[in-house]
Length: 108
Image (tube, rainbow, N blue to C red; front, side):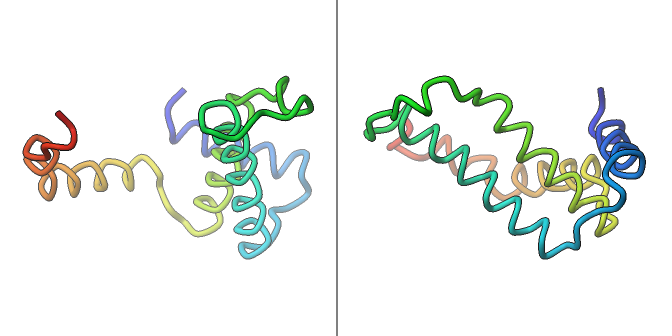
């Protein structure tokens, strides 16, 4: 599935099952909440915090998908084509940072 197809799938689902999009500010709050859930798993599973018993069965992939879902909702609502935005972003990073990381002694 392409990013464009995924954005369309989210839009179709919202229109068929979700009645309508939540407003942009509500979705921004939801996105923040979902990113927090990813952060919780990451800090406890891969970081130095101990993992709570209630978090051990959490599916990190599902949490990433929740973030992606809400991000696509916001992109749809604001008219952002994430495929084009990602292409432009990669071009920006390539022109700005093509040698920066290679020359970073901390990464060697």
